[in-house]
Length: 289
Image 1 (cartoon, helix red, strand yellow):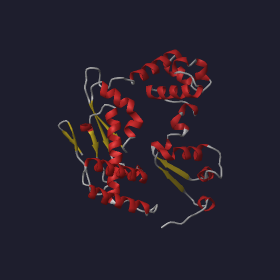
Image 2 (cartoon, one colour):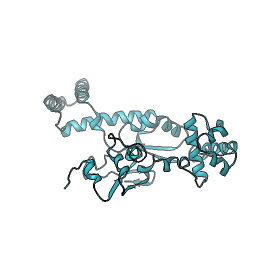
Image 3 (cartoon, one colour):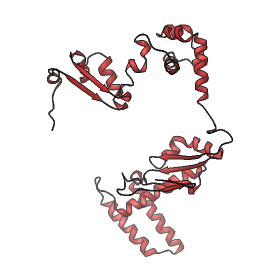
Image 4 (tube, rainbow, N blue to C red):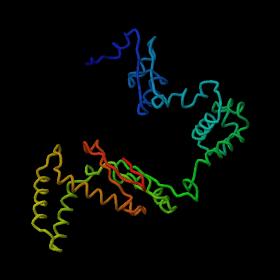
């Protein structure tokens, strides 16, 4: 049970506890804690309460200055990780490449203590730059290594939209690349595409003399259902199957274009879309559930 209360009622409490979890809360937490009290951010009024505690996980606290840029608040215990974080922040702040950062950039942006603790700006720049360069590779595992790569795609086409270039590169390098689609994707297919594909199948079967009666029955069902379909109606099993087939063939064509063989393309249909179904597929000699 819950009672809705206004800010005034909340502020009358002897003690207030605010709990925030997740990165989607980070921006509002920063505004509530660090910016001026405002009616736009009701939680900012908690700054005026004498006994309030915020409990945050790391993602929710990520944009607070004490986490994102602690050097702006005072002395820090400098180590390699914080040094890299500060330099990336400084590079973005002054809009300059890391190797072009000067001592003036450091001192005018509250990073003089970093220079005093970790050495000359030139040395810091070079150290961070070299570390970041080592994290970039054009050949995962090394040139003499062939890897089994599994790309999980939340939805058919997410793989090629997000990383087609990477998929092509991995295939070109000789890695065994698999892509696994977590749902069949029928929800993203428009109704008119189902009718168009049904008409195509009808004409295809007519040309080659394949079961015209069954084709006509299915097409009639599709047209009757979709013509009377309301926005809130769920698709019939037949319509869902056709939409899934459309999306599946599109996804397979896109993955094959990237060089992935059809045997390495898997559709999982995970149980949060299809209750009670758990899928299994194999990569080499290993089963993946």
